[in-house]
Amino acid sequence: MRKTSILLSLTLLVSACGGGATTTSVAEVISTTTTSPEVATTSPGTTVPSTTLGVDETTSAPEDTTTTTTAPPAELLGIEVIAVAEIEFPLTVTAPDRDSRVFVGQRDGIVRIIDGSGSLVDRPFLDISDVVKAAGVEQGLLGMAFHPDYVDNGRFYVYYSNANDDTVLAEYRVSGDPEFAEPATAREILLIDQPTERHNAGMLEFGPDGYLYVAVGDGGDGGHNGQKTETVLGTILRIDVDSGDPYAIPADNPFVDGGGAPEIWLYGLRNPWRFSIDHETEQIYIGDVGQADREEVDVLPLTAGGSNLGWIYMEGTKCFRAPECHETETVLPVLEYSHDDGCSITGGIVYRGEAIPEIAGTYFYADWCRNNVRSFRLVDGEATEKKTWDELAPGQVNTFGTDASGELYMGTWDGIVWKLVPVRADS
Image (tube, rainbow, N blue to C red; front, top):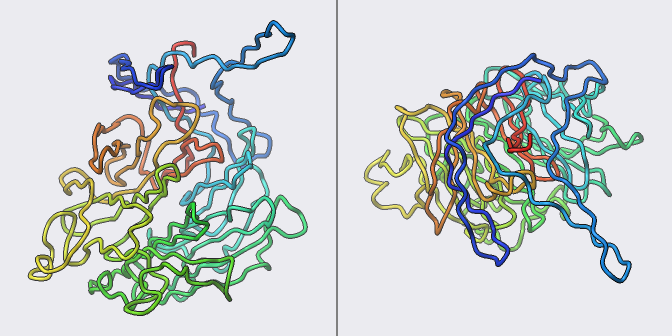
């Protein structure tokens, strides 16, 4: 197993029995460990060892009834990432609810399965490489999301570049064999005319409202698309895939009665390559890739439909186009950094898994050029506890994702899928 670990001095809020919080210090040790690369490959049956996350204890009540309790986890010394699979150009990592598997979308249009034991399944879950164009670094199979009721209806959605350099949102279904999808079930939901092959974004995610959110870049033509609400370029879309033909517009979308494309939920974005929705707080975290000098993370409640994120008038908190930047009401990012500190943000995920409760609520993201992972915690609308984990990311991070339990994964450009795991005193 290949792994990279970092043990840092952290201040972690751990829930006390009475509902308050106590402060626990983690040992101030930094280390990097590399062992023999027993990474899962395309050979079926290759298994990555699982990690023990807790111990169950059983006690008996005096009345001969049995109560099962779980022992608290051992002291957290740090966190590390372990390699779970070798998959070429992983751009999406996701999983449906109530499913032990993890699904990884390759840039070339093939979706692979990592099964519940950690083995890479030999047969692809879906292969649409014949319709996906994967040129350069900004095209390919860019997004994937399972319907909230996938276990019952077998529906999922992908966003990809086609042969004409346009982008397609399509629905697929499992058919016949419930373990695998059939390309013949394709149903085109949305076709977006792209002015160039760049800034395609592509992240897909269902919100707690049941609607599908879709990230669309500004098209990379140097224009003002982010501020043109009559186009869907430079936006986050919000659509109802359970109604209409092929979809319906939610009644509370900001432009449902005019003034812009009715699918738009948020606008003023450049290239929101990755966003995520924290279902616990019902907030959307958007990593928007900058141009001249700034990379940014925008965080908004899902009630903030119609908000303008600023691009092309603003880049982060800086004026990019005057005088419009002084005349337009925009939402400023909660975090930004200059190109002295990176060049292309990979938006991430708020950790809500069970394996590392000490970091619950921490948002992890990366910079594609700096080969590191960074994090912060949002408190009262401000980014706090900002950290850079120099040794945690073993390459250029393309994407973040979770399994059905909320555990965090990331895919790197060199073709490895990694999982974030705890390092505890008893390990």
